[in-house]
Image 1 (cartoon, rainbow, N blue to C red):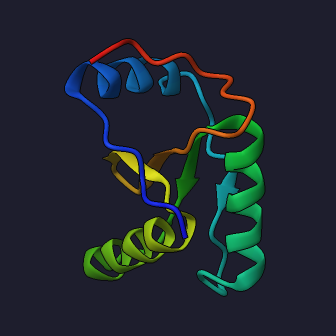
Image 2: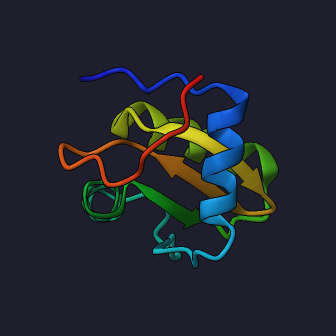
Amino acid sequence: MANAVTLSNKQKQHLKSLAHSLKPVVLLGANGLTEGVMAEIELALEHHELIKVKVPDEDRELREQIYATILAHTAATKVQVVGKILTLYKPSNAQKIQLPRQ
């Protein structure tokens, strides 16, 4: 499993600005974090590189565990968490998003 990319603050700011207008592409349902949901997140990351995942769970600790599981499984980088929405970044082979230099 590849490691998550380490981002500088400038790069994170750039990704946050790109993510601002995005809608969550993956929403966790009543079944929580299933293999199907993980596969969906993987596909979305490969296709978009920068995605939002909505975790509607009310329990904050449970949400944090779900975020950690997603990050560990996908090797994506957490850009930010706003409310119940996790923003993830993982460069694909196509490298669609150009990050600013450190």
